[in-house]
Amino acid sequence: MLKSITFLFFVLQSFNALAMNGASLFAQNCAACHGSQGNGGVGVPLALPDFQRSVSDEFLIKTIRHGRPGRVMPAFKNLSDAEVKSLVKYLRSWNTHPARNEKIVTRPGNITHGKQLFANHCSACHGAEGTGGHGTGVTFSRPRDLPIIAPALNNSGFLAAASDKMIKTTLMHGRKGTPMVSFLKQGLSEQDIDDLVSYVRSFEKHPYDQQVALQGADTPIIRMESPNSLAATVKAVQRAAIGKNFRIIRVQALNQGMVKAGKENKKQTIIFFCNFEFLNNALAVDPRVGLFLPCRVTVVEHKGKVEVFAINPKYLSRIFNNNELNKLCDEMDKVYQDILEEATL
Image (tube, rainbow, N blue to C red; front, side, top):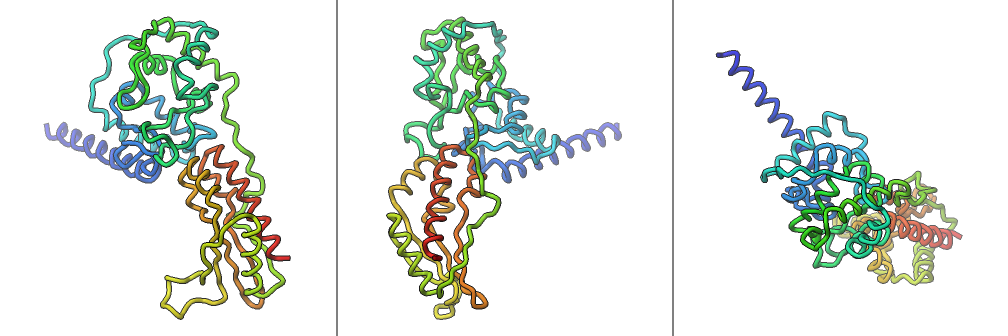
């Protein structure tokens, strides 16, 4: 009896340790996008009852492993198999609703008819080619009447993770709490839904998730040496920025606000400038662009040498996993390169 109690205690302790590890992994890797309680944000709401009821553990594992190439969700290849399982177990702790008892059977469908149905019923949210909704889940970059952005169905990560049964279940029942409705209630037959599933599966032949090339993104900063004095270089940076249709916001010592007034390092100056149209367009794509906007260039004098630094937007684009934002990062990189080159002539 004592051995049985000891064994049970050991199992419970192991389970608690695993759950705690999953909670920690979620906080470190997922909460920033999916919310601390899985209620969504940039990422989909993982705690949503209909989501929990329609996806399998295998779907969650493959989603963590593959991510969504070209979208916001990265692939977590650094996590061990044990960590992924622990993370999935933690996600399942939000599953408070009983599983559906019905048996979903998938059948081969008519792809041509499925394409027509997709155009009529799905493309408004998921895009004409299944490339997903525009922007991210943050309200600044999506219509406020949508709680989430429609996922990309024509995506190698989604197609690798989602089974036909999962897709069909979602189409049949919808997902309460999102714009995804039950297609059965919309008047489609089960055969229509099989046709839709077959069309979505046909995306595997040509998944639309090519990444924008990130050439020249090996270093996190752009750095150039100036032949002029610090003061002259600062003025040159301002002229170059204005010439690129940017407005100077302010010029200050780099460590201003971090030291007592009057103790600032006069040999380190940062120039803030902004093009508000570009800023608004970028924020509408992905609010995380605030990591490098408004624009800033730092001029430093050290041991008689004047150097000019700017953050490398292409390097940051690795974090975003967003093709639209990668294009803006490329554009911003060219702006920085031009300004620094002109300022250091």
